[in-house]
Picture 1: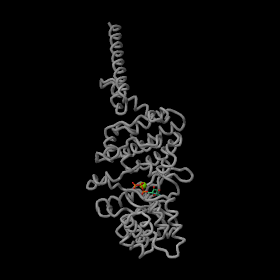
Picture 2 (picture 1 turned 180 degrees about the vertical axis):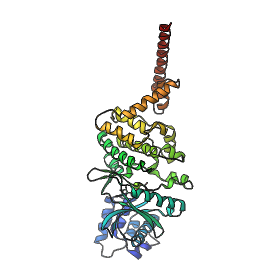
Picture 3 (picture 1 turned 30 degrees about the vertical axis):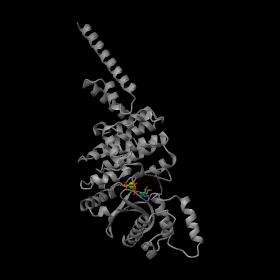
Length: 417
Ligand SMILES: Nc1ncnc2c1ncn2[C@@H]1O[C@H](COP(=O)(O)OP(=O)(O)OP(=O)(O)O)[C@@H](O)[C@H]1O
Ligand SMILES: [Mg+2]
């Protein structure tokens, strides 16, 4: 039995709809589980707060209820405090905070407001960077970027206001329907590559490309969300702490961001978009693990299972593009998002991806000139998930190439005599 009655709820009387939305959003119960409780409650003559009922039914724990109250209270406070905006409903939450649908009163238009978690407000260095990056993002204007509108502080909470996109995220589509058709994946990723091209020409790096940050409108247009929302995880003080917490992000983060390299550029976004594309094609991220750390180490050291060995049929052209995007060393990736756009447009037109193929040939030549047979290096590089026979096949073909080279050299020497 509940000892401490849900005090805030009693005081304020949160709407059933708000409580239900939060329970569903936090995945504490399914709609099917909630329905009979809500129905029973509606039929009852004396109504008690819904949260109290949910605790008694064992749907939420008192601790979870207290956290829900705190969040609902915050929403109410902010509702009264963000000048010029009225919060309408909560649409979701992520690692950095909660997103609300809201009305911008003066313009009479619907916007999305992301309310950052309190820990963000406590870090002055982060706040300064957050406001600076939001300002730059608000200057961007692109059909495939969710428009940043404003950023500021209210009631001790920092917020980020953006265009409201009626639609679903690629993450939601993956959860519902599994992997995408190749042509659809290319169509969506091409639009995001165009967004990155626009941003990178204005020196903006997104730093958190992932399926949850790609929104698809009802007309099928892809839009990149959270552009200009400075990443907390790159703040040195909180880095290690946050790394473990941003679970969604670890699947898509680039090796240089994991290492904490000082100068992260748009090639990091290309890597994360590559990991997103890999997930869209196979239904699984390139690296998995039971702990965030394990996934991060794999990004640094392992090669992903080649696309054509994941059980999904993916064309050779697209496989080479994904391989180029996911190169560990950023020099081996596409130098700019514009180059990626070029290759994705080739694929859309049914042509081979010229730039990725050129890069691959150059790498092969470089490896040859280093003196180590390509087949051996390739086998070595990709043997993480290969059976032993595949590795030894690599050695055999490597030796065969060496033999062939020595025959050619001998013939040439013989002819020159
Ligand atoms: N501009 C927007 N318009 C409409 N809905 C949005 C908008 N931005 C986010 N959402 C919704 O809110 C949900 C939560 O977004 P949020 O960015 O907080 O989470 P996330 O992307 O999973 O994590 P992160 O904090 O790392 O970005 C999204 O899944 C999406 O459904
Ligand atoms: Mg997001």
